[in-house]
Structure formats: C-alpha cells, structure tokens
Image (cartoon, rainbow, N blue to C red; front, side, top):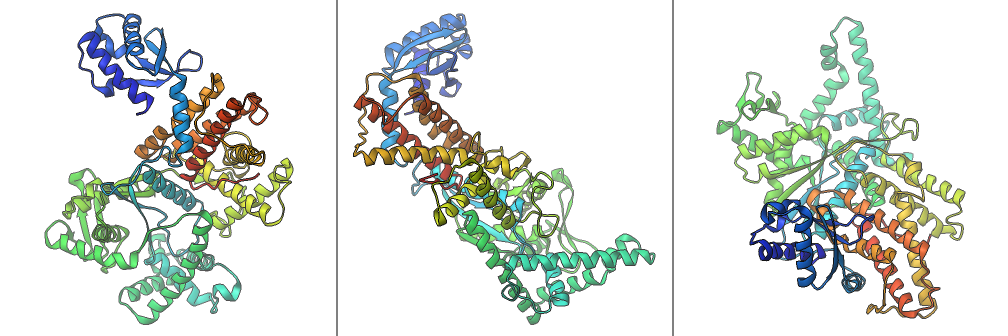
Length: 596
C-alpha cells in the first residue's frame, strides 16, 4: 500500500474514532508537503471541520496525534493553519527504495486474464504521400499511450487503418500514368512513398493550371474545379477501381506497395509498430453494407440524386452524407466498416482513436451513427484528440515545399545532434558506428521527448535545436543523466563492489530522502498517465526525477564515500533511479544510452 493510501485509510479511521464521522476515503486530500515546510505528506483538514465542529488548527492537532499513535510509519507532525504535515519514518523510505531496486517491474501493473482489452488506433496515413511532421506526433502519441495502458495492466491491441483508396490515391495514379515515364523507386533511387507523393504534387500543379485556364475562359471557379480534365480523369479511375477494373486495380496495387515499403522504413526509424493493420479497401464495403442496412431500416434517407444521408439534427448536429450520388463511399462509411470489422475480430472493451483535433466533429458523428446502427459499443468510443505541431518558419525545408516530411525531419535531427555534440564535446570519446548510433539515439530521444512532454491536447511548436539541448527539460538531458548513472555503476563493478539491496544506514540527508520520495511517486505517475491518456505526465515525472538526482549527485559523493554502508545506500539509490528512468522513458519509446 502506498503511503498516500495508508494515510487516507488512517485518516478515515481517525475521523471515525475522534468524531464519529463516516468519511469516504476519496474526501481525504493527501499531497506532498511543500519543500519550505517540514514533513513529507500533507493532509488538508478544512473538509473535516463540519464533522469536528472545531477550528482547523485544533482538528489538525487531534488528527495528527491520532495518526502518530496509530500508524507506525508516521513519526511526527506539525500544523500550519489548516494543513497537517506528517513526517514519515526513515524505515518506510528505505523500504520503498529496496522495493524499487529489487523489482524491475516497479510501478507497473501486471496484465491478467481479466484485464480490460483496449484497442488503440494511430497513424492512419494516406497512401498518396510520405508521413509528415503531424504523423510523427500522432505515431509517438499512439505508441506511448499504448505502452502506458499496458503498464496499467491493460491488454492492448495497436492498430493502424491505412487510407489506401479514394480520390486522393487516384490523383497520384493518374499523374504517374500521364507523366511518370515508367519511373519506379528502384529506377530513380527514391523511397516509394516519396515517389508517389511526388506525383500527387504533380497532379495538383496540373489541376490548378487547368482550373485557372477555365476560369480565364469565363467558367466559374466552382464549375472549373469540377470540369478540369485532371479531376474528371481521377474520378473515372476511382469509378473503375470500385468496379474492379483489372488494369486500374493492378496500378493501384503497385503504387500502394511502393508506399507501404516506404512507410515501413519510417515506422522502424521511429520505433513504432502495430499488432494489426486494417486497409480501407477491405473495410469500406462492410461500411457500405451497414449504411444500406440503415437505409432499409429507415435510419438513413436517400435523396433525389441517389446519395444517402443521415439526419443528425435531432442530436444537435447536421446532415451527414454517407454515400455519394454515384454510390461511392466517404470516410465515414469506411470508419463504420472498420469499427464493425474490429469488433468482430477482437472482444474489445474500449476503442481509442488517436486522431488530431480537426476531426473532433467526425468522431462525434461516428459515435452517434454506430449507436443508431445498433452497435452498443459505438457511443463508448474514445477520440483522443490532440493538437497540431509546427516548426518555426524556415527551420527545415520539405521536399514538397509545404509539408515537412518525417524522413527529412529525422535526418536533420541527427545532423543537429552531431553538430551540437561536437560543439559541446559531449561525445568525443565515441568513434565510428558507436558515435553514429548515439547521435541517432540522441536525435530520436530529443524528438520523442520534446513532442511527448507537451500536454497532447495543446498545439505546439517543435524546435529542433531547443530539443537537443543537453540542459533543461529535454530528452538528451535525461539520457545524459542516465548514462552518468550507468558510468558510476560500471566503475563500482570495476572496483568489485557488490551492491546489497538490504540497505542499513543510520540516517539519510534531505536530498537523499527527496530522491527516494520522488521514486515512490512513479507508480502514481504511471496510473495518472493511463487515466488521462497523457505521456506528458511520464515525461515530466522523468525530468523531475533526474533533476532531483543531479542535485543529489552534486552534493554527495558515491564511490568516494568512506562509510561502506552509506556508499552501498547511494549505489542502490543511483541504481533505482536509473531503473525507473529507463522504465519511464521506455513508456515514451525513448532508448537510453549506456554511454554518452
């Protein structure tokens, strides 16, 4: 039982004993004591005054005496206004340290047969262009949320829905047919996703020129956008694809396979993966069947132009198209089909969609439509809505000129890591492959940490140089501290020092106790991050822990300590910090270096 739970339970018992009050445990507010006050744990007594019929100071005095007399780990107390500050025994903190040192799974809950099954969807790329900066935030959030849910004892299925069909894919297909001259990724030495993206841009260039030419001839812009030869040709390709025209389908397969090969390289670089990948081309027909079933049952309506719509005005929304007049599907249709397929494949207890906040309305609608179609789990889907991420203007150019693609960003990050490490002399001892691997580890650690430390619901600005700073709240700062800890432990091993988990030390300093207290908060941080789907909670916990360690390391020697019991205690402390940092950063997908 955590010290917070122990104090809550003791407070409930104390209120019953002192005042005959039946107090719910969740009404007991327990927090860490402020550093400018004496004590470890603070109980807020203001909510208890209606039971005690006394002032805050007297109520806190009564309760403090009760807790000292009845809870062995509470050694002393002091009262400041309505706050009861409790001093916890050294033996308790040493017990926490021993537990964290001896247990490589410290802070993590085990998965059992009865664990809730959560499916997390993330990435969701289109097969007409490379993954970009926005996808990076999506992938890092999705992967980290999945790992955090696992750490909270959930069974997790990580899924991806690839938007591999539709007008946007047909635009790339048409452009390649018109202007590609048979180019392949192998023939020009380009990643397949970049090659397909190149022709998507090419389509857009020609399409805009056609629209401008029609407008010049007196056609309205709206009409021109529909009459341009390129868009008519792309729509015809879509119609042929849905009619299973053999030549069109073969072209589609070839270009999509180029993209998948490119995506796989990027996913591997980012360190993310999936248990199951769904494809819109497999799910949209299931969605179409569901929409037609809803039409037959009177849930949806068909308009004069043959399109099918859902009337959501009674739900405070508007009209939503589900099938176009030519019978082709929209994104919503596909999402209905994907949802049905997933729940047929897995006995999911919870479905989490990691999708940007520009799609908030889409998921509101999806939940209502699934509910209207009779799927009881529809209304319980959870849209993890995150904010946009941008770069400072002019920092990094993209191939397309408008979107920063993921591969370019990672390559530039590695270069920034190399330059900054050289300037600071941080990695002078490393050479060859060791140095290159470490530059990459620092670059990816910086990228992941900088993005994940921000409240995911907020928009953010990603600054590559700022993220690779070796000081402050950054991934490299945490990686460097971890490498420092590993260096101390290697030196201890070289000196044949055996680290004994049974620490026996007469007293510990305030800095040492602060560090143990920070370690003790890790299980609660993991739980809070899971409850809030927030990797930022883990990121900032890790930063606070290594900051606390560096203060301790500045004030205390470890291997130079003459007292063997104190030296052993500090080695156990350093080792426990390293282990918790590695676990915590692992939940963010950040690799930790043995040397830096």
